Image 1 (cartoon, rainbow, N blue to C red):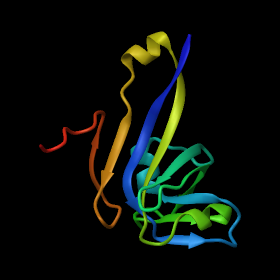
Image 2: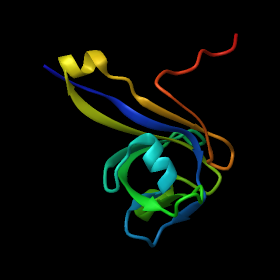
Image 3: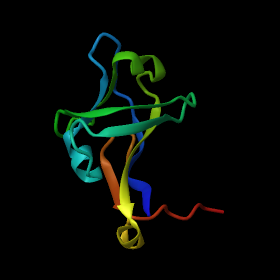
Length: 126
């Protein structure tokens, strides 16, 4: 059996640009792509915390160190500058791989700068 598991996520990144006339995709700061182990042209799922929209697209490389999160093409109608997104990537694992798997979770500050990288969701404060 194979299982599809969360491979990585960029948690609560802020949209810096929304380009309707651009050919579709999501441009992401290269440092964030590397931290989350997301390759250029890899499929990503995007969840907009502000409006509940969910969509799939592919990642493209944005300027390294810029903090860029640009939602482009038709998806630009689903996210505005300033919206908070969760960007997730998934992979298929064998049972043996799944037993050892730990996702790559990247947490950022309000300027999309990396604060922490982990393999588990931190406990919520009571």
